[in-house]
Length: 179
Image (cartoon, rainbow, N blue to C red; front, side, top):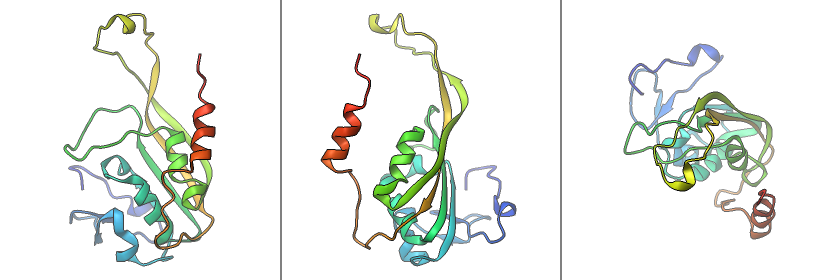
């Protein structure tokens, strides 16, 4: 519903626009944190989300709701900012890497990640001139991250797969290249 938003309706045979606010391209007004209650479980073949997740206070619950709303085998495509200025305040909560989106829409949430990536190179110049930042090279970041996932299993209505298990969390943390 952002000013100047363009409808993606032409990209799909069937399209249901969902937002928390009514607007010209919104067919169903609903909170993404509870879309399965509004749309029903197993009622959609695909979910397409562009620059939405950063505005949701609990995106892990929305990943769960997307799972509940999709039929098994259904596809979910989610794109969200990686390195991007704060916008649409005060509801701008999160930034995502492709790995972060893959964690949200991965096995713990009943999905198989088909592909993911980063795009839209941006350069970050830290304004902070602290001594430890003076030698920081000007390196690229990315404007956005995306993930394409397929639902592989139904979640129980009360199943919450976040945070990940301690063992999986430790394994991931230990893979961080500490130098």
